[in-house]
Length: 527
Image 1 (cartoon, rainbow, N blue to C red):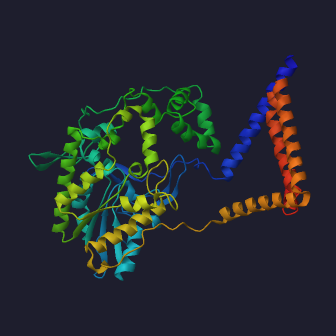
Image 2 (image 1 turned 60 degrees about the horizontal axis):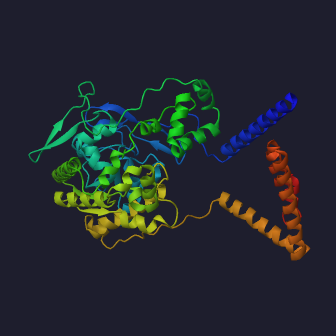
Image 3 (image 1 turned 180 degrees about the vertical axis):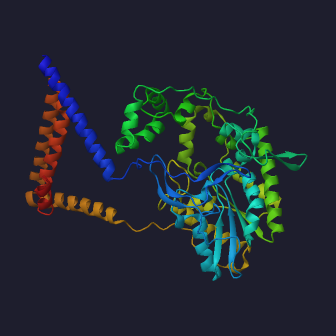
């Protein structure tokens, strides 16, 4: 009896190792997991002007834990994502655009040549017939307040012809309000403006984290408990740099089951992450970032909207003093475009299901604020909605930023707006197509399609050779044999044999396909 138990255990271990090794090979061949080294880091903290900024001359490879993207990113000596030749002074015949924004403009999710700024430069050169420079001043996490501070400190040195402001209504209002953003970040990590009697007053400037006060916002979330090192921490530390399969499942477990991931973090098998923060919240938890969709808006959010409108006005005034035109484009959030994504958010946070939400509200408020500030603006929502369900994806599924296709569509829509509004009169009548064209199939896609086609031809050839009736009898006999095998395993409770049975059936399927002369030589070589 003991010998049988040991044999069964050895079989289980063997099949487990075989499955793990096969999965490891598959993940590596499919390049489905991120590399073992950390993603590039391009930001320096603190910065006395804006709280944080880009590290000058930083170059690296950017990717996220899900490996949704893998991009080459480079910043010049002035912290701008662009060539070193892009200096403060521009040649006389160059039309220069200063592009302000946050992570959508910074765009570490795509390669240097695929960003909104670079694609906008190419399209403007084609439309104007003269050299164009686009100064990409986007920085991840920047609010309108930091964009204004950077414009005053650095932007004026570039003497642009146009200041183009990329507004992301989903979180810009929150980023600008001290009570909201300090709760979101858990600290005061930048200067903040306050609107006092209709006038903007700057606080914590120049910024020094040593003198920043403690956060007193009522919106601060419950902090997760300190998690000591679990007993399996050493195992995880050994696996992480060596196993692509481990790196593949790590972020997916966190997404699929935060509570299970939080338990694994306590064992040490996963490093503590955002899921521990989510699990620590109460049952009625609603993420602060989604409260911008609440209808009607709470008083704190209404104050944030008023503050942001005042910041828009300061940007317009600063641009005018520089002798530059100003314009704005509004970036839609993925949940405002994709109804299924919004439903998943409601499912993830049940407390939201009883509220009243308006997904277009942030954009409407931003457009009203820009109009009040005197900045011509356009929304990219219509162009993105029309192309969302067709062609390649416009947003990364989990990261939520644009793909290269999304950047290309945004650039084309922006050029059309600049021409239609006559902000750049020379572009009047220069209309670009806003329909996303599906790219040609890759060599890998053609190879897969060819294999499927050969398999279909093989089956049809087999039917023609044997005759439909005889072929159906053979298939029926094979299925009955399969049922008998599984039935025997179930009756005898020999479930440990299931992996072996599956492998044998897979080879049997290959042998059946090999009977067709079209692919027979290839399959016989394989087996």
